[in-house]
Length: 205
Image 1 (cartoon, one colour):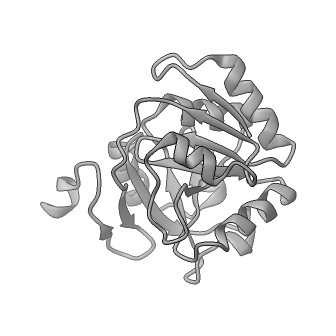
Image 2: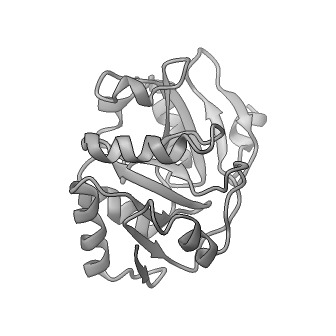
């Protein structure tokens, strides 16, 4: 595994570019978000998806989310109501995962049993720069141990995934708090998990 430590506010572009090339070539990367470290691949690379599914199979508790750089193309990958879009615009970028009905652009093997997907725009420069450089969503799952517990030590993460992952980008500004999960697939929003981020806009509505 290649390993690089990046500046948290001004990540070195050459390392971002290197990670994007790994993704495009079907590789797997580990990268920081505003919650935990993610393990990711290119949505449009079948080889990368198969590798990520193999890693996920070691831990049935891992769920996929889709990392976007902005709002431009979310409706291409998920069915977004006007209400959902307005709510997400108020809270993103931020430590939230929004559950939405899946669109056909996302391979069905990455859908949940309820035919939904998790959408994220993290408040983290490295994650946003990676998704922007790739030009489409990064399929991501939390870097966890076999018990499904998120890993918080970067060198432990490196050791655990050294063989199965091609490149890791490390940074100091990771909160190591779970994201708040909000299900927007029905008529009313449902808070699945209260994690990082302010949910008062939903609780007090």
